[in-house]
Length: 265
Image (cartoon, rainbow, N blue to C red; front, side):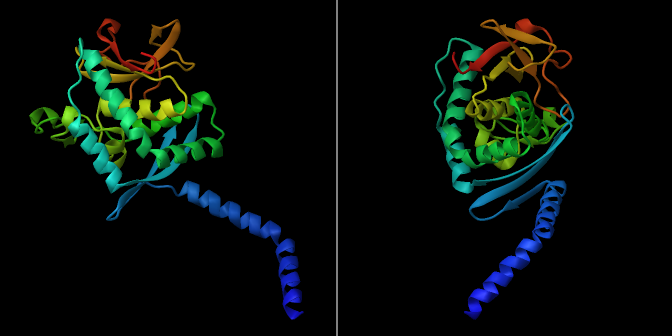
């Protein structure tokens, strides 16, 4: 009997002080959000990253945590290294086949990243355009690195360089694991993530400019390619600040840009 009385008193106290409990919960939640910092933790079995970035267009600050197991990273790397060079009739077709295989193979290893992005979208009430911005801005915020198939040389002194990588790129899992990626490493990652969320991203490639860019059919202004009657806006991914529709200086001749990968093609 005494036990029941004690339980009733505890419930009464909790009811009376529910406003205090809710207030403390809110303070804890806000503290966790505002104190988000760039943190990476490595253990014997996985790596954990906490990412923080901003989107000035929507005046939003984002925080996201994810982990990738060492085995997932190793399997992704092994798949890339074991790929046979695809048969292709053109430069963009060759790279499109490489990108597609990496995107499709890595999809299964990105569940936690995708879950974290889904929670981010729900918690911040992001719509179709603002969520696409959040994903691209997350990747833009990661500092650029050269990814080369051979050794690093004097040509690569203006940015850090990651050497001896098959095809001169990191796969989506490798990129999120190491946080090392160049232009097409970024576009392939963004393509993989946005495809999961039912967007229609396009990877563009230029042999003349030796560069890769994203193109996306969301409301925007500026430079675009018309594909099947829709506007797909150019989107630079290698540095912060780039908005859709802006092409980097010296790369604005559209005849030098080709579609490497589009879902329906």
